[in-house]
Image (cartoon, rainbow, N blue to C red; front, side, top):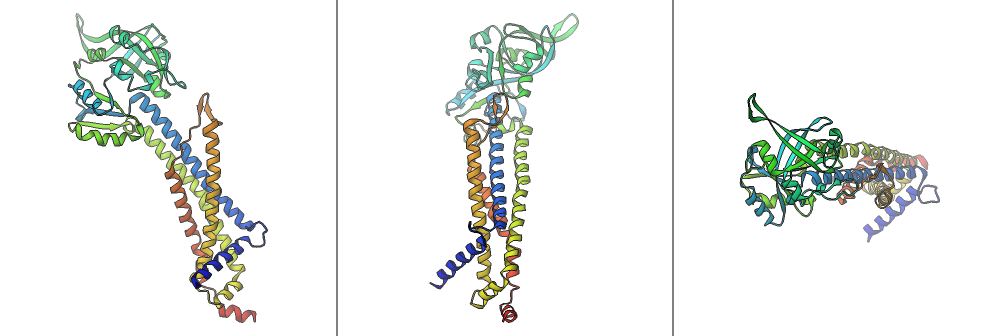
Length: 413
């Protein structure tokens, strides 16, 4: 019973000290501390959610063009029995398609450009790469249509929008593929291998680097241009959810011990890690806002201790121990921190909800600032907030042990 009464009295005293002379339940100095914590929490959650949105958006574009997972030979060896591997992968509930990757020179009447050409089976690849489907929000087939029959039999080519613009070509125009391998004999020695294809479609990947450098050609043509025969570089694999790619790899890896499996995050490592590092850097920078608020909390508690020394001495004389007084001021800090966290979370959710539902902030054209809320971010922000609060009250708590109740009473008698 005594312990319960002490706890009630500490809560009562904490609320009185926080209110000071204010009628609103919180003193002016504590309001600024509360606002600092609130803004810090709001900024951390908002920025983290925006960076999550960018990560999701970029990963969707990478997966849309380069697939979710890739199965390749160890040490870069090409795959010979790829049809059997495709069937084995599809038996596990995934979609799979063989790909042969080449770097060729593309020439048109307007000029020439180097390009990364993906030799594909058009029928299978359409189930793997959304970029070869109808355009949605500027991503996908922007002009023409990928007809697998015409593409494979008549020799079609699908160009990235930037590459098509650089070459000055449109649907129906001819493109000359030039292989860097000198394999065609002639009276003048070995010449590069040439192949003429017709532009069947133009796609947009939403990634300027991909639009400017990527194109798709029939697998048979790629095998002919590379002298690879009935071989491919890798299989592209797609599951139901690209966020589960690593889980899928753990499931498939035991079935293909002679091959290497990797997920989409390794396809464009520099871009992926740049986004992750940017999120971490922004989080650290905004964390300083919260640290400043914690300094304010330290100062306000020191001020209260200085002003209330006589009362605190009286409390000691009445039987309160140093540990009780430390709990009193720690409780004040935790109350402020909790209120600040709740207000910050509410404001962050309101802002993120408005952006997610209305797309109020646009980066350019139809591109909306993406947001993606993750529970882990809330857990991290709340945990850090309480840790910083506990650290910031340690100095004021040490001052309490210096209060001598007997000396204070003697001075004021």
